Image (cartoon, rainbow, N blue to C red; front, side, top):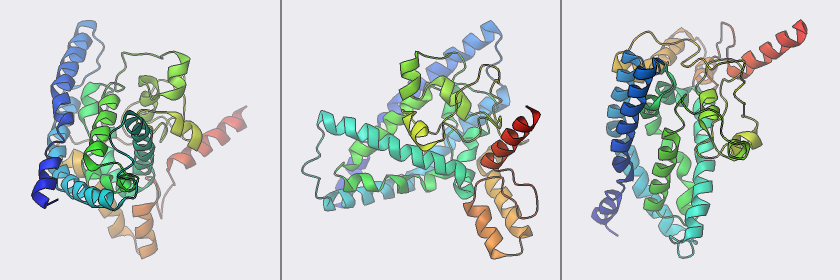
Length: 307
C-alpha cells in the first residue's frame, strides 16, 4: 500500500466529527436547563476556554495522529494475527476492552507523570462540571497519546478499527461530564464509568485526587487501586488544587509547561530537573511535597490522630 492509499484510509477516520453536532446540541440543552433552573452549571469565561481548547486540539493532533496511523499500518502488516483478527463482532468486543485498558494507563500516567500532566491539565482546569468541559480536551497530550496504543496493531487490529474504537470511547466519556445525573444502579456503577465516578475524577478534594481514570469501564480502577466513590457528605470541588487565574487560551493550554520551565530554572541539579518531569505533579525539591498520594496519606494520618 502506498502512502497515498494509507492517507486515503486515514481520511476515513471521520466518526468523531459526526459526533460534534450532537455534542454542541447537548451543551446548548444543558445550558438552557441550567439557566431555567438557576443551577449555575456554566460560567462564561470557563465555557469559552473549553471551546477554545476544542478548537485547538484538532490542529495540534493532526500530524501526531497521521504519523501514528502510518506506524499502526506497518505494525499491523507485521502482525502474525492480522489474518485472524478481522472486523468480526468478537474482535470489536475484544478491542473495546483492550482499548479501554490502554486508555486507563494513558490517562493514569497523565496524572502521575508531570510532563504528561502538563498536556492533560487543560481538561482539569475547568471549574464547572458540564458537557462543555468534556470538549475541553488536553491539548499537549496529543503529542504523546498515540504511543500508548502501539501494541494494538501488533495484536492484529487494523489502524482504522483502532481509531474508530478510540472515537467511540471518547463519545461515551462525553456523557459522563455532568452533574444532572446522580448515581446509577449498583451493577452499572460497579462495572462502568458513570457521572458519579467522573465527578470524583474532576474533583480537587484530597480524597478524590487522581482517582477513577477509566474511560468506559471503571473496573481497571478497582483492580489497580485508583478507585474512589463519590461520598454524599463531600461534594466535589472542581478545578485544580491551585486554579489558574488567566483565561487566555494560550495560557490555559500551556500554563503547566510554563510552570515546569520555572521549576527547571530554579533547580541546580539535573536529578531534580528530571524529577520535575517524571514524578507526579506536586513534587518539589525545596518545598512541601503536594503529590496526591502524599496529601491523602497526611489526611489519613490526621484523621486517625483526631479519632
